[in-house]
Amino acid sequence: MNLKKKFILIYKKRYFNFIKSGKVNRKSGINFSGKKTCRNRGFINKKKIKNIDYFRAYWHIEHFVINFEYDSNRKTLLSLVQYNNQSFSYIISIEGLRIYSFLMNGNLINARIGSSTLLKNINKNQKISNLENILYSGSKFLRSSSSFGKLISKGKFYSSIILKSKKALKINSYCSCVIGKVLNFNYSLNRYRKASSSRYKGFRSKVRGVAMNPVDHPHGGGEGKKSKKKSPMSPWGKKLNFVKR
Image 1 (cartoon, helix red, strand yellow):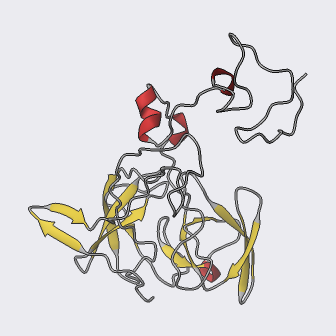
Image 2 (image 1 turned 135 degrees about the vertical axis):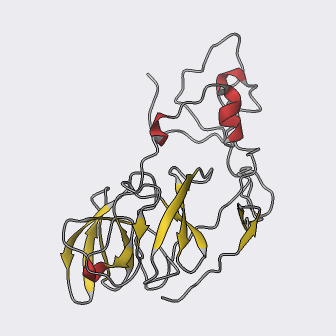
Image 3 (image 1 turned 90 degrees about the horizontal axis):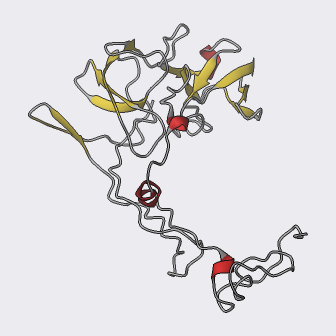
């Protein structure tokens, strides 16, 4: 398989430092011209972006898992793997992998969990993840925490895959995928313990329209916590889809 993206590794004193991407999305709620297009957004912490091998660059070379690492840009862990040709890369962790688990990518019929192979080599109703939609484009689907799909039909040129959302995809049988389900890192159990936790994510505090002045919001004005008896409106004066009784 052709390598679409180069992964540069600096080895110094047994510390692996992958090249980080310099562009960081600040989520400030403004468009390309600087106009505010989304309210209550601004200030997000800078995140170090780790380069992930979505292409599984080295095929037919055995490799094993060295360590599991946290990544601030996704809901699951990353696995640091070492190939037999002394190269390293990050991959998305698959459920069932352990440290020193051996993997093999390639056109294999009986591939292990966590290995990458072609759709035409997979049995029906088997769980897959990190799915390509176009040949040699890298994995695009089923990359989030605890996500997986199932192969429901397999043909000579095209195969049908059903996602967790019950949506069916028709994809080339020569596209690659990873066997197994993406590791669930209990991301749904996270709770914001204080106000600054959501501020670090880029969400600013919101102010009620009733507490504003009439020039700032259609609900503004009046004494105390009184609200007007007409239907609720957006900050720009447009009526909402329901009427307050």
